[in-house]
Length: 100
Image (cartoon, rainbow, N blue to C red; front, side, top):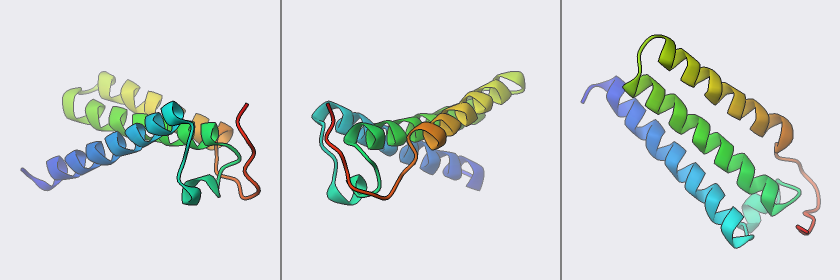
């Protein structure tokens, strides 16, 4: 495996871990205190991590499996997911609120 392939493998593993962490928080409704300190609610923390993980997975899969226009479109979708995560669910300092 060359350096590019290893980088994609590590990126895919990190993306999968982030996405699973987000899903776990969404399903359980709980988050670690260190994570919750930076987000106003568990749902915001969960969706932030889920969107970032999904974007990283899309980027890796698009680069590894697709070529040309397909890879470009996949990267564009990944960038949109990151933009949504940063604009809508970005970390904020402050007191956590209860989810309703």
